[in-house]
Image 1: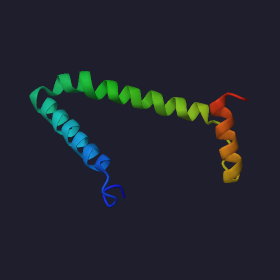
Image 2: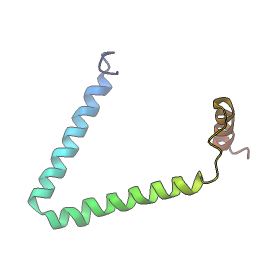
Image 3: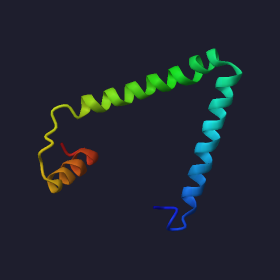
Length: 82
């Protein structure tokens, strides 16, 4: 969608993903044990922590509420009124 609009953000993000992907492949090929210890394991632990906190924070949320109520609730929780 952004690429069709001619936005430079799409090109920059694609370049960043390519650099990250190639650097991770290079690190994996150079020393796979260090890759798992210093790259994969911390990333996996961080992802597990973020998802776990998200699940705990949204435990018990009513998913059958209409969209307008959700927006009001979201604005209220972001501003700290509740």
